[in-house]
Amino acid sequence: MGSIRSRQSNPPFRMRVYGLLLFVFLILCAACFPTDLFAARIVRVGFYENSPKIFTAESGLPAGIFADIIRYIAEKEGWELRFVHGTWSQGLDRLEKGDIDLMPDVAYTEARGKLFSFHSDPALYSWFQVFSRRGSGIRSIPDLDGKRVAVLYRSIQQEIFDRIIRDFGLSVSFVTFSDFESAFQAVANGKADAVLTNRFFGAHHMRAYNLEDTAISFNPTRLFFAAPRDSDPAIPAAIDKHLREMKRNPDSVYFSSLAQWTSSPVFMVIPTWLKSTATLLAFLTLLGGILSFAFKRQADSRAAELTRLFDNAPMGLFFSGRDGTIKRTNAEALRMLGLESADILGEKVEDFIRRSGSKRDEKDAVTKESFSSEFHAEGKRKDGTTVPLACIVFPLTPSGKMLGTYTVFQDISLQAANEKRIGSIIRELNRTVSALKKSWEQTVLVLASLSEVRDPYTSGHQRRVARLAAAIACEMGMERRKARQVELAAMIHDIGKIEIPSEILSKPGKLSDIEYRLIQTHPAAGHRILQTIEVPWALAEIIHQHHERMDGSGYPRGLSGSDILMEARIIAVADTVEAMSSHRPYRAGKGIEAALGEVASQRGKGFAPDVADACLRLFREKEFRFDEEPGRIG
Image (cartoon, rainbow, N blue to C red; front, side, top):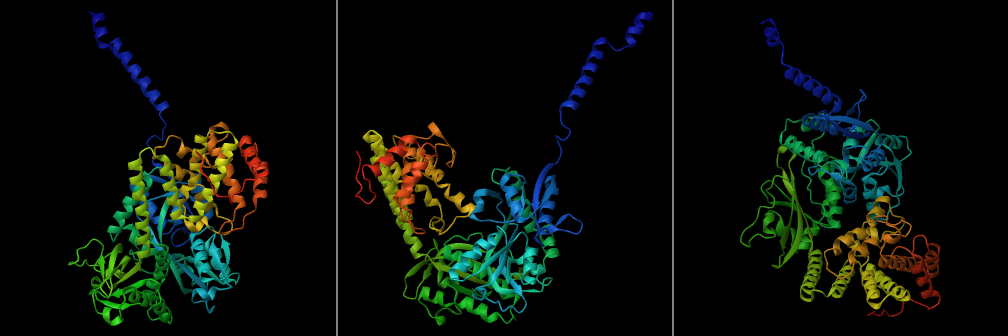
């Protein structure tokens, strides 16, 4: 009996084994799983000195509007922030390399949109402004002729202001600095005559450096947190979500930060649409200055200059009061609509501007919206005819109170005609493809004509390259059908340049790094345009490869050797010879001998030896000339 009781009082052997296995399992789990598996997400945020938007406080920690915003979002999302200090230029470089996850205070441009990822809702709106020493006499853009202007290195301010200066035909020397404080100090010490900055930094620091703001304001700008191009989209999405929530709550961190760091109200009325035409964008930059100073300097001695800017603006302008009636207009608006002042003043904006798509017997309330908006409309002339317009409405709502509305409009008749012409060409292309089905040659010719509408110079270049490429193919013994395919591909090898701004394609002088990168996107753009067109040879891939080189030094994919199609190798040589030997709008040609010298020096390196030899024989033995009447192969 004693032995039976002893066995019953001890745990069974099987239970002891299970307990031991469980203990071992728990030990293995602790060893195998990292301790930070459920740790907070680390977000690296670059910052630089640009108070009050972002700067280093006396405590050594980042402070300012952007710092307050991202700290609030990080708290809500459970992120752990790690701030990385540097200059503005260093921050952009780190962002492009992926060394940081966010860079605050980045203005959106199309070029930056190709390099970085942006959230949708802007964190801040700003504009650019010029400050000078007190008593300098600088009051308008012409006063800067012959002056030295301090700017932030690699800033969008310098890029845009340089275009404005060139439009005025002025001579201005830009002095670059790594931060705005150094730029302001240079003006205070007489090493520069004026400084170009954003309105936040200028208003916050001008008194400390004994500077004053001038009447030169331009380019309303949207500011964002930028992320690396291929980064996790969850971070920008979270920023958008919290920004929208904060902007809807007047007691939020967003508005309390603005109140803490700025001394003037911030108006969230700048529109998101700034691309109707280049002229519209140029004028909106000017209007940004008019709007800011109209409320800040109503009693200032520069009111007369602002009035002149309004009256002489190159776009139509209406200013209407709270009752919606027009109180003021300018000469361009009267000219555009064929009216006199007496015909307009005291009348409703809707009597002269009707939104596109509305019925003729109904008038949409153009000026009664409480936020900025943009739309297309029809302008009613005095003689009863209509004119197509692009419009932007700026409600003036300081402190939430509606004072009136600016309606800005531009005649887009020429743009509409061009769109109609291009639309007609595209419709014709669709009809041709549908009717002829396998007539791929006709498709290529139509695409070539489309390139000519966009850029007649590109078309002439393509035709000459096509002639030489076809001749090289024949010289190499290609069958006539293959040589014809080379010729057709060469006729549209630069079709991807329809996505490149024309001012970059014809820019005199050296291209910037960003501009050169944009140019380098045209082979991929051409591939994207052509890849859906069914042709019995690798047309899209040939276009994709025509800037690749045999030694791997080309772009966009760095292909080399046998990975490059023969057709692309031929077009690469023909393209180089034509480009170097021919005149361009922005430089004289180097001549055919210089071009052939380049082919000879790159034989067996960038260019295939058999292609280079065939090209050299054509010119030196068979007297090939570009100026002969082009023929057709096959």
